[in-house]
Image 1 (cartoon, rainbow, N blue to C red):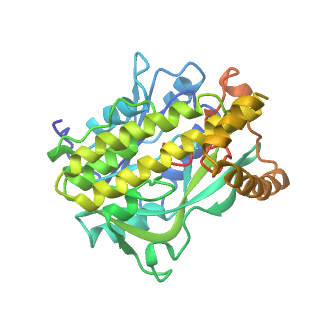
Image 2: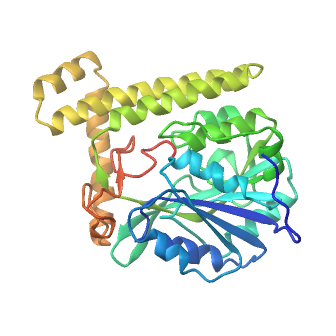
Length: 350
């Protein structure tokens, strides 16, 4: 993974994979191009999209933007790696093609990173409803006092604490040299590959630092609830593989085992939920009898969903299973979160 030669390398390389993202792509791109810190390159890798993504990307006129078109669909992890291979910056940042950044996000994170060159810097995430007029903020994912912080200053997060997080979703700024030196790449899993990528970096000596500001706008996208159980299985496989990187870190391995156990529970709950939704009441009853904790969890989640849906409806957020006409009838995303509202991370990490 040789670093490309560049006469004037940028401070930050930002990578964005995209597949059939025509509807949201330019919102994501514009949020990057309008950053208060302008010393960056944005590398967008189009994973053989079949919508208007190709034409949209070719219409961008900004010297900071590099566009790569995959001749064949490679999957999100391999597409991220292909973009990273072209990176020339000192720091590496990531953004998805249906999300957005606050205008000063890069500047704020870079200021923190310059004082902590051996860390991955991550901020809070604002979960947003996907509406016809754009993203509408709903809530911060973690909160200002997460990880025992004072709500103002950045706080270090041990790997074993991160590994136990209910939501492992992070979008960090990280030193590109560490990625290259350790030849870290995304796995081939169709789900959770970036979580495995970040865990590998932690096993190589980087550590995490949390900034208690919500500067990453994360779009909660509607989709089908089919295939949910498989997502939990895939995530378990990612974490089991990651556990092998921490042979000399028993606390992290223990935390990952706890997380894997939690995902197994989520898999059982998803099986119950899909049986109930499909009116297979006998299967749902058998699952609930086998795992008695499912019934109280079901009602607790129903209450949470009522609050979520009330806010979503008030702001015109798209509903679960709604088709996107701009993506040729394909579902925008697939899966449900552990809290049972749909999002592309399925409650863990995308």
